[in-house]
Amino acid sequence: MPQQNLTFLGLGTMGYPMAGFLAKNADYNVTVYNRTTAKAEKWVTEYEGQFAATVEEAVKNADIVLSCAGNDNDVREIYAKVFAAAKPGALLIDHTTTSATVARELYAKAKELNMEFLDAPVSGGQAGAEGGVLTIMVGGDQSTFDKCLDVMNSYAKATTLIGESGKGQVLKMVNQLCIAGLLEGLSEAWRLAKASDIEPEMMLDVLQHGAAGSWQMVNRTKTAMNNEFDLGFAIDWMRKDLGICFDEAEKLGIDLPTAKQVDAKYADLQKRGYARADTSVLFKQFDDETR
Ligand SMILES: NC(=O)c1ccc[n+]([C@@H]2O[C@H](COP(=O)([O-])OP(=O)(O)OC[C@H]3O[C@@H](n4cnc5c(N)ncnc54)[C@H](OP(=O)(O)O)[C@@H]3O)[C@@H](O)[C@H]2O)c1
Image 1 (cartoon, rainbow, N blue to C red):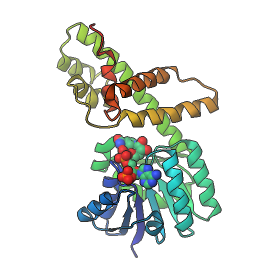
Image 2 (tube, rainbow, N blue to C red):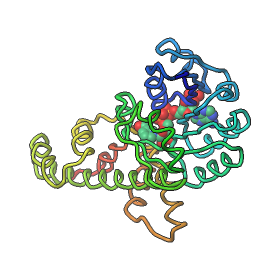
Image 3 (tube, rainbow, N blue to C red):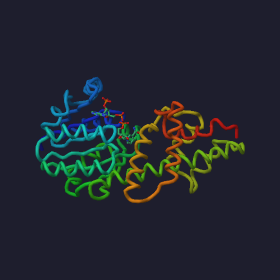
Image 4 (cartoon, rainbow, N blue to C red):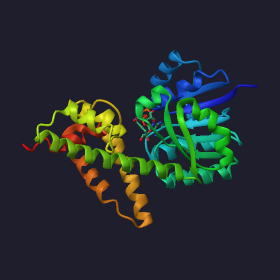
């Protein structure tokens, strides 16, 4: 079997290790691109593969293009270059968390150019990317999904086709709403426990095995209690994602009241200097209060 040419665009917190997992597979010839070239230069010292100086150069021979950038505008900018330079038949997979609107736009444009596009946002955070155990929610055509599944499974423990183009992004929105609600609940629960002098370790040991147990409780409550927020998923990103949720909800004519309250609290925490802190920094919302 000849090697497949894979190109990964965006070597950020998530993309860097994801591209690394691809490079470990001898079936893949991996090219990377990063806007800040120093990161791409570093990547090729750690992994098998080459870097390109421009998006166009990086994608021109690619069978599969993968990307993980920042927001809607970044992805539009990157894909304008991909569409100009990739070859017909190229399979395009975007792992960025974007709006479903952008996903559908790129899917339509890809079709027009005889390319194929999947929206494939991920969950699992930096640890999931570094461990190769992400959860991937995919929107697009079954036939494209089938061709791309092995590649995505290089860094995922679960990759699922949710439905037509945009549906991967919609399920990612649902995921973010779950996290916002969970963290709000945990912050208030911790507040009551603390005010009642319940021993934190005991609270966690007991509750995580019951009906309130969750990933956020197990992995983020203790760190938040210890004022450790230099980990995980920044509230800047969460506010971007909640903004996407609110736009989608408005289109559907529904309200998301708890998420709106949490978003306002995150806005306040951004002003207090916690923009890059993990989402569990919501625990600090009560800091100024004595009880
Ligand atoms: N971090 C997490 O825990 C996590 C979890 C799940 C999903 N996500 C989502 O995954 C995406 C990436 O997150 P991340 O934490 O990896 O972000 P990050 O560390 O900030 O990396 C973003 C990457 O995109 C590149 N980029 C951004 N805008 C660009 C543009 N206009 N043109 C070219 N390259 C551009 C950046 O290049 P430079 O290096 O030049 O800046 C960088 O390589 C986001 O949509 C985020 O919401 C993140």
